[in-house]
Length: 205
Image (cartoon, rainbow, N blue to C red; front, side, top):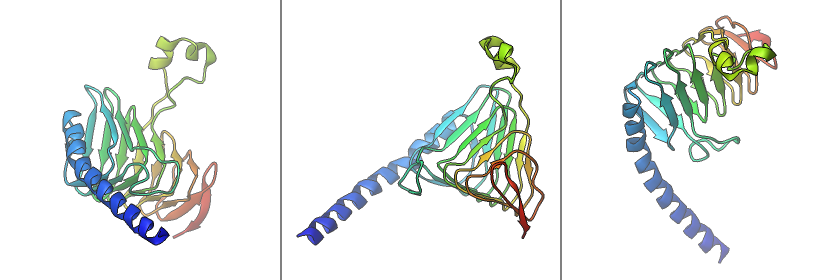
């Protein structure tokens, strides 16, 4: 009896997920188009959250693969992918990039190269969002204009482990690997493995 229920459950689940996945791509296409994103071929499970302000720029090259939530990559801390670009900021995503439940927030400029893998729950920020000066931070108007923004550059073939945090002003060289749950606060040369909080050199590849 239990086997029968299990088979029935899995069959119904597969049908429902199949219908949902059929909707994801056209809805995401509409979201990209409505945000004035220049984009090529892409595939997606789930629907991302996307916000590109007037005066912001976002471009996505061919073969972006996105997992949003548990359906595509159930490894914990599920959320929709977030692509946020502020007025006057720029987000560039290269070819063959894979993203799972990640948040990429650009207040200045974030550049992601080709063949980059961005693990589940990764956050990439090019801003501090708030001043470190309490007197400024307590004044919302001043805090908004005086936050510290610096570009983030991620080279080709980089792999960023799940739940890592990449902060403003860093460059990650091509082929490098960031261990899971790392906090990256400074530049990483090409062909190296870094991990930890804050991330430190582990070994050369």
